[in-house]
Amino acid sequence: MAKDGVDLYVAKFVDRSGLDDSRERLRAFIRAQRLERYDRVHVFAFLAGGWTFNPIADHDLLPNLSTVVYDRSPYQERAPRIAMEKLHFLAWLKYGPVVFDVAKTAYAPLEADDVKVGLVIETTPTSFIKRHAADAQRQGPYAFGCDAFNQRHDDCAYVAKSHNELYTDFADVWPEVRAFIKTGRFTTSANRMAPALILEVTSRD
Image 1: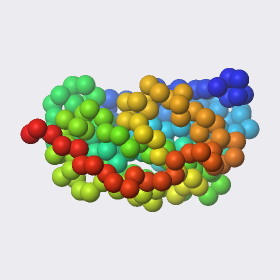
Image 2: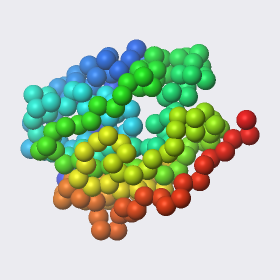
Image 3: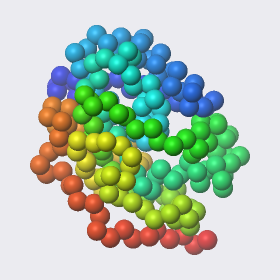
Image 4: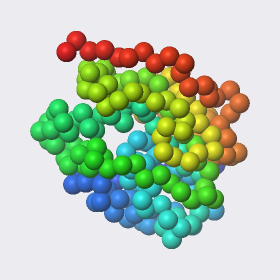
């Protein structure tokens, strides 16, 4: 990223105690790093990052916010509710109440008209979703259309990766993010076709 003229900041903002404290930690990070000194700031938000970032993304905190690319997943966005309902104690031990906050909190979209917004949509379930396929499917039909995520967007692309793979293989996604930062659009080769057939993942339960 440095060769592209991009300074990278990775905010460790998730607080076990919940979304409110996570948002305070993110505010503190933005101020401590003096991100307001840049001409433009670009954000890539993995799933829960959107739940944390959007409610605090006002002009006073980040007057130079230029683009936001959200990682979204019809599969993985069901995981917090599964953890809350089926694995409550284990989830509390590992993550704390924050995972329950995400499960119970509706997504609040970023509304700023002067910020370019992109969606990167995962199309592969994680092993967790596969193991809890029946619980995931009970939350309703999977919707992969770009307009199904309650987020205004300027472009939308699909990646054949699971949520875990998007973390480990982010270098594969970076060219699309870089293009969006520069132009407000993904590349012409980005996959903009929603899956025509979603195979229901099945469990042995």
